[in-house]
Image 1 (spheres, rainbow, N blue to C red):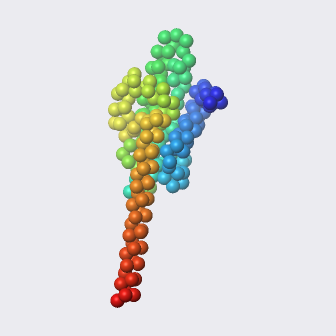
Image 2: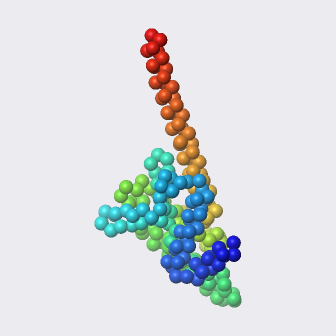
Length: 204
C-alpha cells in the first residue's frame, strides 16, 4: 500500500505522459476486477487507420453483445489536482482548483474532437468514456462544476471514475454472461433437435 501511494505521488508530480501511464495502470486494474477478459471482451491500444490515412489508438475498446463497442480514454492529466491537493494556503488551493476544472473541460473538448465514434470498423455507441483515474479528483470536479457532466454529454462523452467505471464494466460482464448462457442453451436445443430427428428416422 505504501509503495502504491508513492507511485501515485510520483505520477501526480510527473509530466502529462507519466500521468497518462498511471491512468492506464489504474484502468488496467479496474478492467481486471470487472470480470472482462482482454482479447475477448476488450482490447487495449488498438491502432485504427482513419479515412484520411492517419492513425488513432484508443486506450481501450470494450466489446458488447450485439456487435457494439465502447471506447475508454485514460489520458486525463492531473497536474493541477496535485497542486490543489498539496496547496498550503487558500489562494494557491483556489488557483489550482480552477486550473483542475479547466483541465477537465479542456480534455473533454479535445476528446470530443477525436470523434472516436466515426472510426472505420468501430461499431461504437454514441459516447466515449473519459476516465479520471483518481476518485477525489473526479468528485471534486463534478462537485464544484456539475455542468461538466452535461458539457461532456454534449461532446458525446461520459465522465467516469474508478468506481463508476467498475460498475459499468461489471454490468457489461453480466450482459456477456447472459449472452453466453443464451448461446449455450441454443446449442443444446439444436443438438437435442438433431438427436430427436435421428431417433425418428431410426424408429420410423
